[in-house]
Length: 172
Image 1: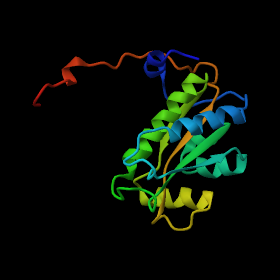
Image 2: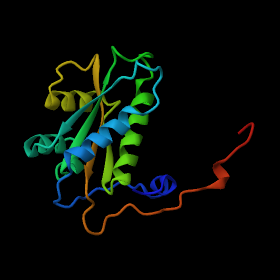
Image 3: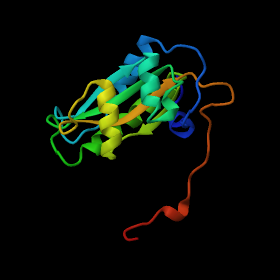
Image 4: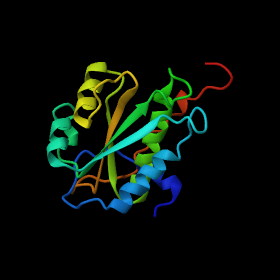
């Protein structure tokens, strides 16, 4: 395991993966990390997850989000709006879950990529259809996270993004 401050500093978007499969145990750890995210209200977290390993399904999603095609596994994060406490800010809860999952992937020696889906209705509907959601009014595909062992030349490495000029105190 990596020290937490190193996980934060080294998480990068990994866009190419090697052939090595991701274990069910690691996928479960990533899903658990997503469910540990802060939500708008305890017990009203909107997240649900669809784990996809099937090459045909990954290829179909890849027609919409090309980086998904060659990933060993993809996780579609779906917001269940009926369960959400605040029906209009579910994206915040989903974003927290997604970031937790990406950080856990780094902790496990894996790489990940956040492939945005929401708020584009057409894209949400297409992803929804692939994963078996016919109506996106209550179940909204939010993003697709690809997970895998980084391909040669790709790695989670430190890239200093700190910019003190973007910090303001009391007022902008």
